[in-house]
Length: 331
Image (tube, rainbow, N blue to C red):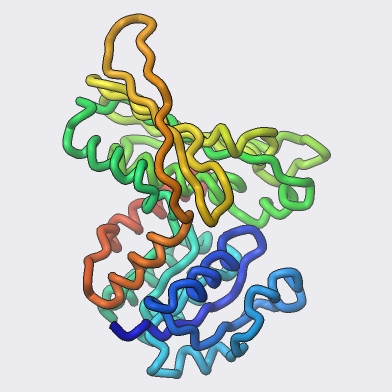
């Protein structure tokens, strides 16, 4: 089948823009790259990122939006600009893959989704854990009732960042809960649905003089039969390998830890499951197969654009998720 003609809008400071453009380059069966746009001064602000675009034409935003042969775009600007450029692309009738979680304004995000709905185009977000086979299988099993009634989900995603990154977090509402906690909120909602209440606990630790950025993020999700939580920090040494998802049901507990190990070109995770009710019951961790971090995500986007599959994440779900993320960020 003919590849989808696509362009990238922007590249971001700390998220997945270079990796997504790499996916476009390494999946020629899915994508034909028309070029890229740098609409927010990225060439001057992020010169170290420019090498990722070598060999491809730099276009203007107007060239991309007004070219009917460009069917789709990846929107990979810094978070605060995401909704702005996605809405322009939606108005132009383009299919959209957008970095998570969107800009910080609810009304703008609602307007974006209204435009997508009116145009009938594909809207796809960069939550890569949605495409992790081990996590996907766990969600399937939970929805099938195999773990019984779910009483708790514990989701953690932390790391250690240098001072300048933690200072940058002040640009985002809720800091780490907006930046990385959005992934965890997505997983909790997929496993348990909308909570009755969200209680945020976002703090500036004061480490190395950080007082304006929320570099410690946590949120509690209250459900009728239990409490779940998401935690994310960027001062946790060794935090990457302690990223984890623990699902406790009345018939068993599943722990995935770490969520990912290895280079992005080939990662795996480890999972253990306990169904025995004995006090000291345990089971060994089992390693998953190796997979690319973004391959299935972008291959799925291509299949949605081609009409081969339907995006399982509806616009209504994306809006509910976004509203919940804002609650975790105290917006």
